[in-house]
Structures are given as structure tokens and as C-alpha cells.
Length: 139
Image 1 (cartoon, rainbow, N blue to C red):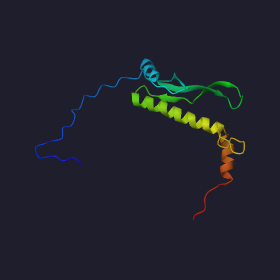
Image 2 (image 1 turned 90 degrees about the vertical axis):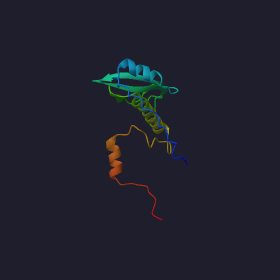
Image 3 (image 1 turned 135 degrees about the horizontal axis):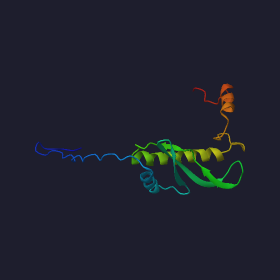
Image 4 (image 1 turned 30 degrees about the vertical axis):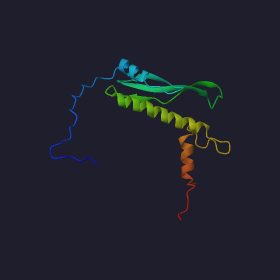
């Protein structure tokens, strides 16, 4: 707990003027992405309209072909108005989502990829529509 006498006042830091935000350019984005690393991944930058895209690439055995090949994550949009924290948090999200995807591609139950990320949505709908659920009974 902070105790102050009537003469002592808490000194707050002086607010620094806010820097004018610079528009994100490919060069600025490339420099920022170059400072972000995760073992086994390479980040790639692209364009979509006025926005940028980022995706990751890593080497892994393909679950379909069973051959080692470059795998690519989904693409994430980066606004030309994005700030550094948005970009770095987007790269973190990219990695987290990629790792969940990889876990789903390799986790098996009785030899099958029951939580695989590539199931057809109509097949998943049919399963959901069957109402086969597995929940605890109330106790």
C-alpha cells in the first residue's frame, strides 16, 4: 500500500507526444516480419488489393502424399493502417492456429484422424444432424 503525506504527491510520467502513425508499406512490413522468428517456420508476405497478406511455411511430411514437402498456413490480412503490435500478434495467431492444425492432422483415435482439419463440412453436418453426442449426465 502506498502512504503519502499531504506534502508528497505521486509524480506521474509526462505524456510523450504520440507519433504520427506511418502507413504500413511492404518495406516496413518486411523489416518488422524479419524480427519475428519461430523455429522451423518462414514468414512470407503477399498482397491482396490494398492490403498485405502474411502466411507461414514449414517443412513436414504431407498426410496425403506421405512425402516431405513445404506446407503453408492460411493467409492473414494485414491492413496498410496496421501498427507493429497488430502485425506481431497476427504472426503469433498464425503460429497458434498452424500448430492446432498440425495437432489435428496427427492426433488419432483407434488409428483414425477423428479431429482432422480437412473434413468435408457436409459430412460434419450429417454427423451433427444425427445428434450422436457424448456428454456427462448431471450428478
